[in-house]
Length: 223
Ligand code: DX5
Ligand code: ZN
Image (cartoon, rainbow, N blue to C red; front, top):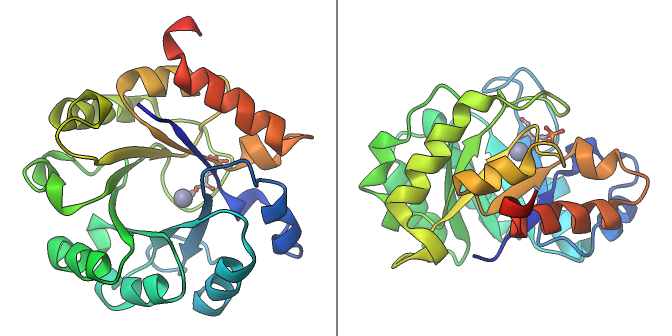
């Protein structure tokens, strides 16, 4: 299973985003948290900023929408240059229709669940998505501590998908509280895409932190 490390620029310096993206050029993607002050109690950035980031980023953009009315807005983030667009199942009327629309637009479509939202309703629909994001903190802020009770969901998803991608190529992403302390056990549970904000941008050397996280996730049984 190829592991992906996607640093979240939520913990980067918002006055220097181009330079902050350059510091994570060894990552697989840059995770961009879009918050609307309604779906979550925090407000970050929107379409014009994402469109510019897509132009200057050395790595693809993994856009995580924490916004209401995703059915209306998500396709616009695809058009703005995101490589993948993740919407929350709690903020979507028709997740399958939306995922199909995103894929038709040439981007990867992902569906996210809050910590208290079950994954079971998605299990028969996994082929409709490129990735499922299991939130491992309550969405809204960086730097929170990992919620251990989300791991059984990661395990159930991995079991449904199969190892090594199995017949499908659906990825299992985790977001929140991912660090050197937690990443090996999250990888053992079956996640293969790891978002890390404060761990990467809080480090003196983000590239070294990305490498350390990647090594732990690739060989989780040795950790
Ligand atoms: C939280 C965001 C995360 C956040 C993670 O709602 O979705 O992407 O940046 O931050 P850390 O890695 O610090 O928990
Ligand atoms: Zn996120």
